[in-house]
Length: 328
Image 1: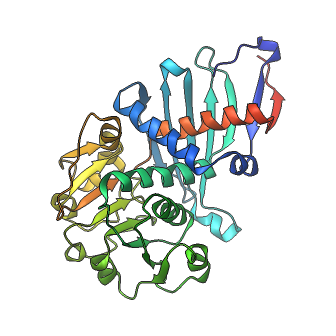
Image 2: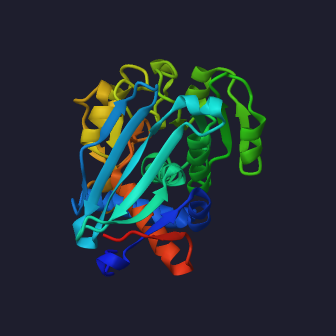
Image 3: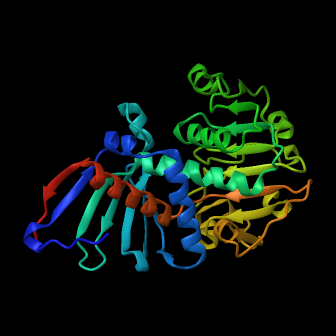
């Protein structure tokens, strides 16, 4: 992972969005994200305190960083949300990843992080569904029709072949032909007439919105339901109704982050398990038929770093990317 070139010969690898898209495969991302969770559980991978701050421009800026000392893996992702980008014809989520040589502090690889963030979050959601959702789940309700909603639903359909029907809720409440067309060959998909009814009828609920407030009523959640919660990733954000976490069996990606910026910030004393402990065998989870389960996803820096390492490796194998002189 680390560079062995002389200071005068050092080079920096740049990977843009098109190159990242070409290099990533869902199966490899799943393996990398699973590894990140297990490294976190075993405390072989460190996650440093998250920066997540509002800006005067109306955006939110964050930094997630960490390392795996035994693997020579070190880096960070600078990312956030700039809603005004929609008016510019651009994507409001923006992310850039940097891999750094831990022996020298020099940058090794600069990566457009938007696709990485999207796909690694989808993979994390899929792993959560595999561990926590009922194996006989057939109907899924998803809040959101954006980039993250698409990838969450893609991994759900990929990893849970029992799923047959999808109900979706857009911000406007209106049907979205493009969203439906994207999944029409893989499931029956239709807009939900009423959000509470859709939640009550579903085995799985995925929330992938900007996190502006509770998306449905507490009484809509029926025994046996599993919920993957993606949108609460900043102080003040929430998607779940008051009182739900107290009724649920809670799994998080990181206890501290979940209490600071996830759904768990609204019930910080709730008992929870980290998903990495389930994946690595430190903890076990036996679901009773009537259990309500929640996976509170805030996103681990280690997920970004293990996927970035994969990209760095594939780029070097294939000669992909732009290499520029970066002497010191």
